[in-house]
Length: 419
Image 1: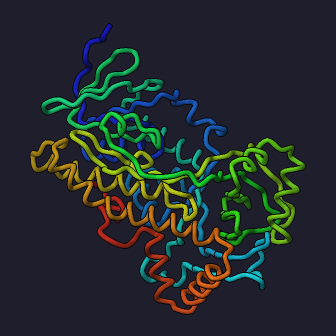
Image 2 (image 1 turned 60 degrees about the horizontal axis):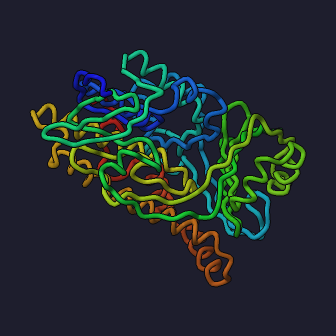
Image 3 (image 1 turned 60 degrees about the vertical axis):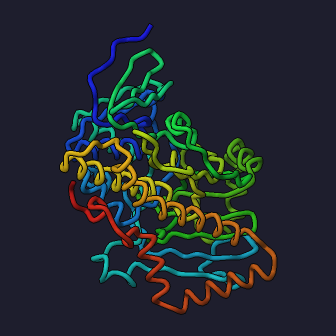
């Protein structure tokens, strides 16, 4: 039996994760009526064991979080990344710099005049972002339907209708798919994806350190994949350890003593008195790129549109750029009296974000393949490339500006301006 239709909204957001929640806040700031739908009970998403990852928030993205009213809650839990050291070698370890490896150093001081002294980024645990989002969503009074599953999305004249598993129907001019790689909204729109699995998984763990990390992030490339040591507050670090999926699952399930022994082989003598804190997580790594970001009365953001390898820590930043661009397009359209779900409006969003997302996804894929190869000519070419970048300050500054999200046509939110 079909329940009676609810009052109309301006935007129905399917997926109440990090990008979906941020979109709800941004859209509400722009005066739009929104509802969030998610199959997971909202309290479950706030549990410390729900998401063990940490995210490198670009300095421009943190400006956006400030503009959305999240900065004050996140700042005590945000660790500056003032330097990034990239090393390339055949052996485990993370010496600074290892004599047997090529290396590359990025320093926030080099672009300090352009960024007002901002770091290259901020490391924040995802669970902290989820809690801050939940508190702000509650303050703003945004409607959240969770647990609730969208089982059908039907597009009609002037509106889209989302049918939930309990038969409730919600209507709005626009539906946004923000529910990740397996997006039902994307499938309902008939949008295909391009992509592949890397046959690898990222083993994620938080460790306590015996000495101060100095706000330095380390990315160490081995033939089997990257191994990242990312600084957190309270003299801790987030580890992202790439292994084959089978080895990754074995590391997750290993005893604490066995995991620690394997970990120290990777660290070498680089860090002192490392202690693993909390559970270990394993996330399969793959690339997924939607062929289109929009369809009639449907838009995609975040991993529903582009799921990339975490090698550069840009996945969430890309999703939040989508949020910033989409909300600016929608709020500007409302002010002009346009239909926010119309093809002409949604095409502005797609044109704004499609090229950037495609180039970044291809770049990250090529970067992983280049640095995972141990073929001598390939290794020589990349080591020469790293040496060139190391010796040309303009190239380093360009890379840092891009990683900080401060290049290109920035939406207002990414400039720290309210909608």
